[in-house]
Amino acid sequence: MNYYQQIDPVIDSSMNRDRFQIPQIEKSKERLDQLADGTPVQTKALVSTVEVREGKNGAKWLQLSVTTANGMMRAKHWLRGNESELLPIYESGVIELSGKIDVYPKPDGAKSITIDRVHPISKDEAISLLPGLPGDETMEQFADELFSLIDTLSPTYQQIAYGLLDFVWDDFVLSPAALYHHHNYAGGLLKHTVCMLRLGYRIQEQDDYLAMVFRVIKEAEQLHKVDLWNTMNGVKIEQAYKGTFESLYAACEAMAERKEPLSWDELALGILFHDIGKIYEYSHLLSSPNRFEKLSPVEGTSETTGISINPIGKLIGHMPYGGLLFEETLRHTSTRLPLDVHHRIWHMILSHHGKREWGSSVLPMTTEAWMLHLIDLLDARYEKWARAHEDL
Image (cartoon, rainbow, N blue to C red):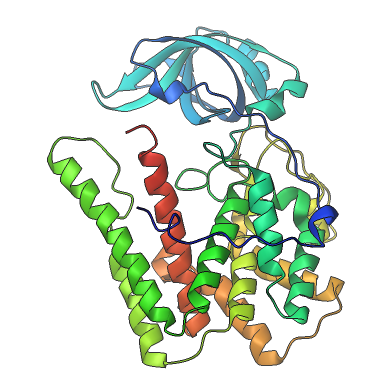
């Protein structure tokens, strides 16, 4: 039994529910990644990236990332002197393609699509092609739980949390949390944030919060051991938790040495802001073209259609953007925090990856920062594990 099945959602009626509109994205049952090598394909897709490649023998092709309603796939279209004809079609962003599934290296390599024919289609069809939440999960259920969790905070922290949502809701609710590794679909950032808040809330309820943390890690280890056993017995499956447990136990050791109470208000704000900068780091069809203007007096930007890394946003990264949004939210809500609390929130945003080689500007130095890193890592790895086990 996985750890989210053992941890109850936090649901209560919230007076703030009607302040925020929740978009509807249709779910598709089409699964290109389940098709066998050589299977013919005809589907509609969003183009995330396209570039011209040339082999050593002079052969040229278009290398693509395309997004369908069930996720992202690599694709290629061989060029036969028709580059000037094909590039504008792919650059339009919304296409219907025909081709076949290719596996390389054979027999068990990565799947991609070799495209034979392509034509542009209306952008009105594009929203149905964004990959959405898996299974029966809905944005409504995660939004309802988000508001319930925010309502558990003290008034000042509620004001900051709802101020952030007022500021970025339309981008936040549709943003992915990553491009490949976890929560890489519309609504992924919402789900990742809510699941982290849920786990953090249940942990801080405990008299001995570290005891619950150890229980959750133990359950994650059980999942990892099952994967290792299956791999040893010839079952091909991604090792979602590989290289994770040393960091989890380092966080536990650091918190145990500090022997401090855990501030739920501070931890919750850290969770809300830690990845919010990804609305700038990633782009998709429904990203607000003026979202950069909310932080600086700059011009708007046009967006790609499929989920992709924003070429401007990647120059800064989501951690500094999270800090900038924190500052902007404080200004918009006219909120003044004590100097130490203000810096502790910033510290959580900048340190949540846990290691400099993983992208953190600083290493965690507070109980809340270590807890945020631990919960973030657990949730990202569990999501990766769950997606790998969907079809087993």
